[in-house]
Length: 232
Image 1 (tube, helix red, strand yellow):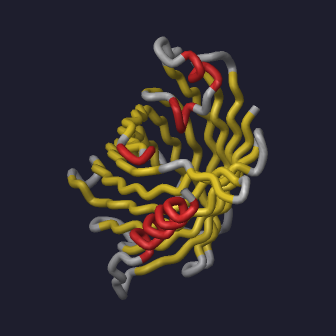
Image 2 (spheres, one colour):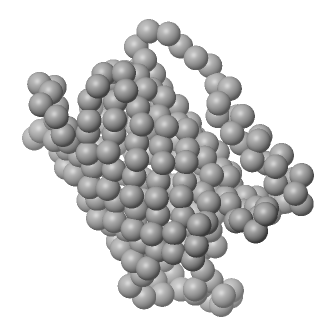
Image 3 (cartoon, one colour):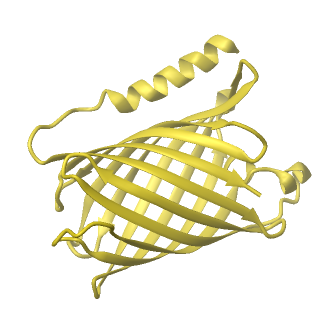
């Protein structure tokens, strides 16, 4: 199991890191993020989000705050799922949320976005203890008074591994975006990372993401993120 875990982690990270590289309209950013998950009952929880985006290329700083309600059906056939983590062992759940995004510096091009969110996530078990994770999402956007919507479809693979007494979930995923402002599928996002359990309540998730956009600037963006997660 040890060599399989190491192979799986190496393959996932290599897949995302070896994509094509373009010159020109390119940007790099670092995103530290804090997530809080508060259990309300067996079928509902709150998801709280706060992050900062440090634009390393442009020297910009943006912030984001979000509050969400996650809802899932209580499992019937697998009773142990009543206490399990939704992300890993529940087959289907939905999220309703609101996010506020905006610049934290005095840039002339800074905008404020109010975003409503509706999404559904489903999980399918595959051989070798791998999971296929699919997500469909709709963003309802108010960007400085201009209304639009965005459709997003994401698919990914993940597998829980244990080595040295540490539990981790490496993953790779890809996502496509349809923006009603352009009437086109204009954006693709590829991401690889690993979620590591620090304790029963705390996890950390470093990741790398590559974004390609055919209608917005920058056209090519590299993101390094670090998410700290708290469960209560």
